[in-house]
Length: 464
Ligand code: SAJ
Image 1 (cartoon, rainbow, N blue to C red):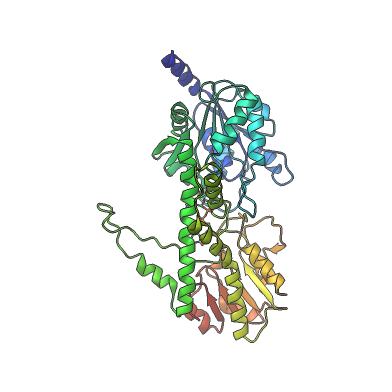
Image 2 (cartoon, rainbow, N blue to C red):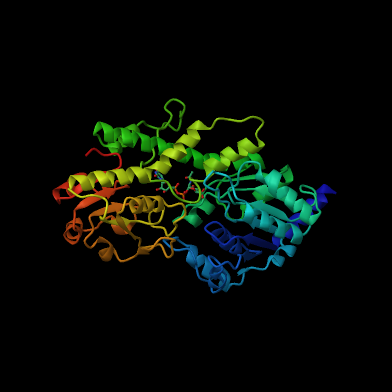
């Protein structure tokens, strides 16, 4: 009987309807990739919200709503919309004959690190009330450990009056996307798929084989949830370590980037990694932004605090998070110090801030360090002018007119290492500025060259 059911199911797999909920940085590339696989018809579901509703019509015209450089994505969206295997709507009734449903909604945390699952719960309710027997539901959004089992599963079961594992399958399989390489990271990086039971895991692994050209690791949903937030927390803690070493190098009057280079020369011996564990000191910088690193450590802590057998004092993780959140303050300190050397006060000074996005060459402003930096400058009575060549909308006024931002500025502060800023003609820029002060938050410019040009130069992790 079980074999027969599996046979029927694999026949169903041949022509499959896949619904992706949440047309964002994860949902859009995933939907387009599946829509390009033979036998798949894909429907994207997006709320017709003020902020994102416009994406529905834009995508249905075969256009890519994600800004910045995203190799291959625009062409793929145009192709699958043209061949009719991808369309977008705000109608959740599309779930009632779906074979697979992917959940890619935002899972933000508040300032106390508590997750807010309004979207996740709302779409789980919608899915549960529509979904058919035998459907596979996969959560791709990053969630706190325990969320699949304790929040999503009960909602789906209550709304559908079906039992998970018996009448439908449920799994957690996280994305590893990064802005600037969405398609590459989904198709070329290994994938982890964790079901609430073995059958759900198996079906999720089968599903991702269609788009992932790398190893797919089966596990259970809780282990997969923890792996995701640990993966990003690991990065956040390593960045905090680099930032702390940078502060120490400033204090000692040496160059942290030279230290990093020397530390990372420790050879990695793949044939015997234990003999010489690799060093991969990360880059110190003006701050850590994005939808992931500022949030995932809190999701990890929340999961352990909520579903763990005993409390764990996550001091390493939380102190690291707090140190990374302090970096915009440190940037403001370097700025005040540089202005002082130039005989200027921060109060009343015009500050050109280069980079609103949290990451170079992207339009993504989520949790950008430029926001707290801007607010600190405002608090101190300065007149910051934000500039960014990629960002389209942001809650704080900004410009894409570089000359206007630099004109009569008392300082230039680099927050994001956009390629447009790499080869700026600093001597011309100096002429347009009122006070030649340059604060480098991403080790973009050469200290000696800046000094030769007559700039007062400060950089995270460098002597001055
Ligand atoms: N940053 C540093 N120093 C570094 C690396 C990054 O200060 O050495 C800063 C960046 O400037 C940025 C922030 O950290 O403000 C985040 O940068 P990121 O390169 O981690 O970019 P994300 O957040 O888009 O991508 C991360 C990645 N996670 C890991 O590499 C473990 C990506 O693989 C994940 O898919 C993504 O989070 C996610 O969606 O979870």
